Length: 268
Image (cartoon, rainbow, N blue to C red; front, side, top):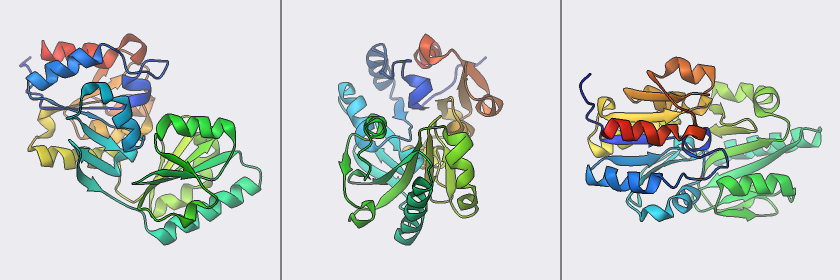
């Protein structure tokens, strides 16, 4: 097989790049140096906030590309490539609906994800601890609807499981917006057409790179479009079956540092 001319590598975080403890593997840092030497761009692609991704990759010394908020915010070397903010009236409608569901007994927490910060109202410690994993800039406020910020995404944390509880309750929103199960406990609500794949195509355009020059790694449902935007698409060994179905290749699990070993093989 002819060696691929990879110019861009996009990598999901949880269940993909991060180890089972949620940490960036130390082997990544020398690998990023190798990628820089070969002029290959590296882009973490996550439902996480931009500030959180930047914090996680601080040891890289800058110069990375980021696909944040499930694709609603794309930044290259500190400069915005694209963003897609929700309409304020829609945000109000969804937040009020989620408040009503919580009042009816659903165990959920709401994060309103702005460009400047993410906002929560709930003082629930478990929810706050989970939100802090993904939002380095997290502000507890009296009213998430009273903040002067562009809202990129509404994230809902379901204590009892997103795929069986929150997602079905919000299914009708999918007629006009993206409702994505982004983890076992999380559902993300975004503008129509917003996903990691669209974001990756924006980044490819900014870099002058084709899908044939792009590798992507993912494991969960919000990674499907990301993999479809890259010819060198890898599902992790324990990926969701729907993700495995669209990927051209498989990579070892995150516990086996599958992203790193696969990239090393591509470089070699």
